[in-house]
Length: 235
Image (cartoon, rainbow, N blue to C red; front, side, top):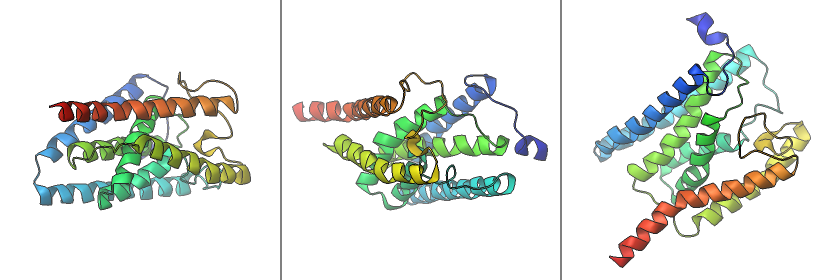
């Protein structure tokens, strides 16, 4: 068991292991909101707190694993990729239930985490990191779905623009830190090594491409609520 967890056999995109991982993630995307919906208010709060605890524990294990089997460094291990900081925002949302935090997790995190689950960079230290990587990204999706189906949250009018501005503003300090440390946070310095049809072009054009497609994905995520609201007003 120890050897299986702390060694790593290379996984490739959409091979049997990756497909099984995706299916497990999708199972949790369905089961957690499904059973969460059946809980009363007090038990929902307990479940929400439990998800926060699981998220924090995942981070402790993740950094502990990296410290023990590798060396932490400034150019790879800061939590400055989109999914990294949206994960922490998701934890804060699950505790505070703040509307804008939900909008970031839903509009930005849901799409980013979902795409990462489908097209990750397979650069794990060991199998344990592989598990923790997908657990963290799956939790982002769970946080977003919890907000919609359990907390009854919906993105407000203008939320797409606000979240897009937030993302653009985050790129400024993250880009500076990447330049100082030699890192590639938010993939601002170099195109990620992934097989993903939305990542194309050379620097800096791929950044503009991803930025535009990201805005499009957020708009698509917002549309069901806009259309539902229009139907509700008509009726």
